Image 1 (spheres, rainbow, N blue to C red):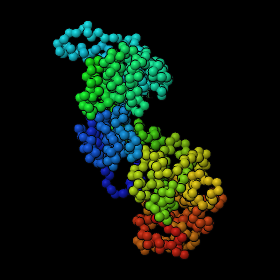
Image 2 (cartoon, rainbow, N blue to C red):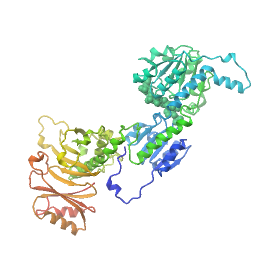
Image 3 (cartoon, rainbow, N blue to C red):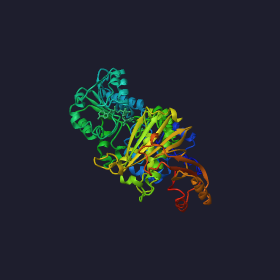
Length: 601
Ligand SMILES: NC(=O)C1=CN([C@@H]2O[C@H](COP(=O)(O)OP(=O)(O)OC[C@H]3O[C@@H](n4cnc5c(N)ncnc54)[C@H](O)[C@@H]3O)[C@@H](O)[C@H]2O)C=CC1
Ligand SMILES: O=C(O)C(=O)COP(=O)(O)O
């Protein structure tokens, strides 16, 4: 989920840009209407070359593709504004999902919109292969009446072997059962209950199944483990009378092995919808390619990737992905993300105010505790010596997924950084990867039993940072006093985030906008002193919160790094503009404050 803009950004006067969506392929208008009725700028640009696409992608917030557009890493990297890549269909093998994840771009698809179309096309190819329909058709068009040459076989009573018992595979199984076929299948991850309900006898090994097949059909995605999974050796195990179907992806069946087997009479026929290169003559070998020879081979019934090409399927996938594009560009969560966890809409709604809170807590930590006094623009994070413990207390601890809160912390920690390597777009898609790459250790904890009755709010979040050598795993003999700990605690009330504690100081302020945070002796005259200095500098105070130190009996033990005197307080002032360094330095004096810092949240 792209973490929505912070309230600070919402308050800005910048005009809100209309999201732009690029559609470089034919996508049904039913979904596109949804984009237009959401006032998005929809550009249908068919026939662009890869270079042309790369040249214009920087303007777009979303791209919707089918199987023809190759969404490579270079295209994703050029898409600086890209938030979502939507695949109007199932297979995402034409999308570099790893590159999308690295860049924080969501990939969504339509997992079931074209399942029936693909299954029916498989059955159609099976029937066409079994009954020689294309040859009969071509002969008659050419004025021939060939009957004895085109005697076919029936499918009733025959065995259909299915590799890949997922959505398409099981739909084919049910349809084939209706034709009176015996169905067997292989899938290491099969749901055995669903298979039993579809009358599929599941084989634990592929080879044990192949010898029994009269028809073999593949319905797996194209991934490393399925590439070439039916090759020379597998075909050797099959009957000479068997026929093979591929409506999944070119390359799952080795095209050369298939062509040779047909040519040598080791298989009786094939129905092929999908090709290693589409169209086959676009491969580097052109007209001489194996795929072209396979497509033109007489015993092969071929179609140009038509599995999903029905009016119904195209309407369904288009609406499915366009609805998700609308949600994502409006800051909500998708329902079929390929590279992000699924979060129920009601959970997402409950989490949203805490996402905002945690992001601000992370940014406050970096600006106030980590970067102040640090010589680097990355604060102490660059030393990879900080371990963060994020504890959810009360109702928020009951929510199933806290991934958006984890992502919000990473975003908050990194957003104040100015190092060139800082990721531009941190969100639920890439937060974990970013922490791994930058060596940031974050542990999440749930305090379901937390007693919040007294507090006046139902949930709270605590961020504890341990800084210093051995912070993540204190080593024996390491002087723990050399480690520092910092605490920030916050809660949500009326949908707004509040900070309730900073180290040993109990406070209560909304972390929004520019703040001047002063640490001073808790004695008379300090407020007046700071107020008058800011007034002289023309800085208006929006609010002020004076935070006394917690007593040792008030959970304040060990929480304080900034001096151990109980007679200190934090003064947090919300100001209407940045405070000049000279003014800040002028506040620090014997009768004034001990320390003053400006943070922008
Ligand atoms: N020709 C066309 O127009 C269409 C083609 N497709 C293709 O069909 C594929 C399957 O689609 P769905 O059934 O919706 O996907 P799915 O994810 O529901 O099912 C795929 C199944 O393959 C299984 N599988 C993965 N690796 C395997 C292996 N090594 N051996 C055996 N089984 C394995 C998985 O466990 C899963 O059950 C898609 O990935 C897509 O490439 C889908 C729709 C239309
Ligand atoms: O959904 C799929 O996986 C398909 O292969 C359909 O491809 P298409 O959208 O028709 O180019």
